Figure 1 (cartoon, rainbow, N blue to C red):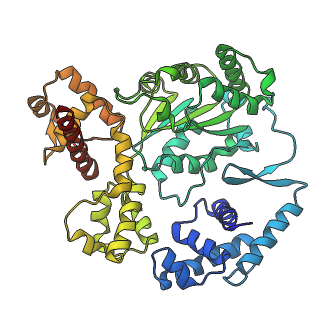
Figure 2: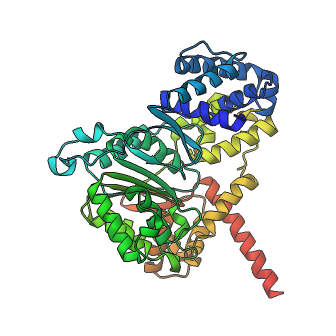
Figure 3: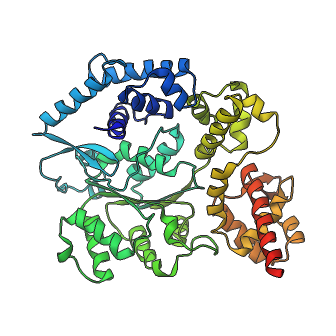
Length: 477
């Protein structure tokens, strides 16, 4: 195994034991140890101190000792992992270690699970579900790092799926907020309640036919040559499988089939038929559940969430105090200043990792020194992420968000209308769409609603406006 393979192997062993992924420093220790590097070398490459890396390593060896059931330390880590891998292969008469995309899973080599004779949906019991061993197809599931506390969100999702038997759930939020991490953790907790679990990414914008064929081939074990040719027949066959078996399907990066430069939720013209899939799964009786991860909700999901108790949406917010774990992993100093930093970047895990890396590089991990400058750091990486969000906005949304960005305090609808030459109905559409994209913050002030932006979004809105004005001026000349 090379360094990346052993890293995935160790990560999945720890994940199976604790439900948490290796954090950045633990990953650095695993990779560096496998490459026979010293702790000072690992510390230098991970922008940390040798003392912190030694502490991380000590706790990691203790954890791996429990997992491997032998004493593990830096000197015997490589041989211990190799011995464990060999022991797993020798047991392959019962289990195989199978790689699905970038994730390894232990799967039975026996026959696939049978449909329970007494369906839980008709008997009102979960007893049969919990005894099943699911068939997993997670080839598109990403290899993620640490999972940070989302206890409340996990409990809500589990209740919707297991207790309320929801058919469709959308996990929504701005880029970097942790939708994929949450869905992966949820999968780990509830997978035994299903016969089939499938993870598919829409990141490459596959056609509906491609997605349907991929799902049906796994659920029906049919070769592609035996699948129907028409989309309607494929949809019918998929729904038959979802009724016959309890399936969990996760579709990631759903925003890629939705249109840019329009109000949130509209489809790109060539992907409009996905709306039929989402409506069928949301409105038709079956035993299964579809989870959609997206920056914004498709229109059918919004409508179904209002009208159907079997369809729900979860708008994911920041981590709050749990984001401190990221700063701790990064070895940042001045813990009393962390709350201010987390609030500024609204607990967005990816944003906080980006600014934490900058603090490591520029301020020797001193948060107080960074905050002294009283300026908001975006950096090219965070700017690029926010640009992707802003590129999706309609002209109407950009008008509104730029208006809000010029105000220091939160503003009311009437105040926005005074500054932007649009009708009230247009403003309502824009505010609703920006809210669904997670780009505005709504506050309650007595009997009226006020709207504001997070500091990072506010800063980028000003940058975007300046860039647009610059392009307009160049067009004139």
